[in-house]
Image (cartoon, rainbow, N blue to C red):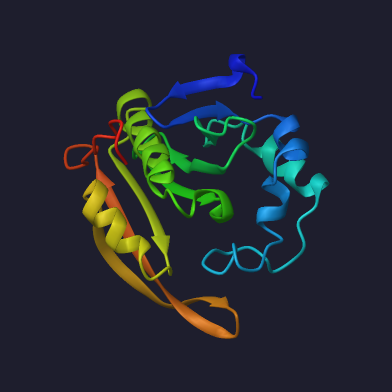
Length: 191
């Protein structure tokens, strides 16, 4: 069970929590980056992940340039099932990069958990941090379409052969959403 004192946001289907050293040890967070299938569409699984490395990553989130929150499924509140972050926060130009990973074994049957977590993080970035633009990039074949459809992201361009993954150079689609154009879906009781 998660420590209630670390819950940062309450959603309809997810709770967003401050990540702690216990999350590194008690959840599958370390293993997500060692799982070849889970890392098929991200830039992990090039080198092994360890508890020590994950603790270092957690420590790096204490700066004012990165915010990372754990995703907890309300229906299965024992541990985190994903992580979403805003990084490279630029306080002058008011933009940041969004990224996330989900425990696909847990959330595969309910991807809206991850979408609600992204919605919460986008709202936090725009309404609490005062950002104007949140951007990201992906080489997953379906993520770009989902971000455009669900949150009103715009495609800004493509970085050709940007990522080497599983023996191939992959194009990365660059996307962004703005404070005045973002769409927040309704995550009522039916997802």
